[in-house]
Length: 154
Ligand SMILES: [Zn+2]
Ligand SMILES: [Zn+2]
Image (tube, rainbow, N blue to C red; front, side, top):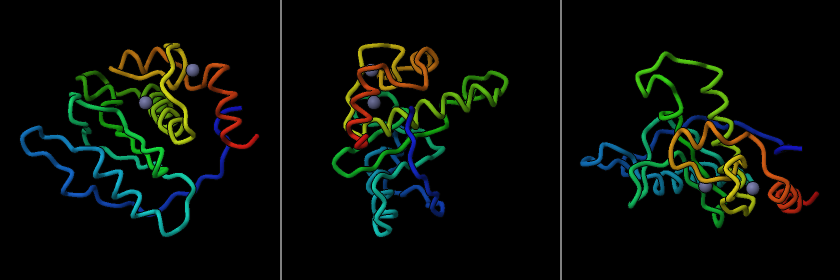
């Protein structure tokens, strides 16, 4: 089993302007999380995953692929660094899709209460860089798989 859940897409929202940091040329992901929460909160979604295409950071890190707030049930990922083109390489849709799935499943894992894994193959392993993302699989190690299933009430 992976993450088998009912998924609903909502209308696109604008990236909140107050998240932009002019000197860094990047967006602070935490205010965007707040925006996603407000945006989807009224519809009573259990968990919300925002997908954006701007470069994200949190203070203390050069960039992040995503961020999750377990307390709020909201997560966000950015696609921008998952494309080969970002690194001056020819685009590869397959690779891009794999990376996007991994980062989305990673953040959703956090929303189900999972913490980072020490196993570099587990999808909840922290990606410090793209090599980490490419090395890990799209699935959870056995320990996190069973933790996830418990969290999902299975
Ligand atoms: Zn993480
Ligand atoms: Zn694990």
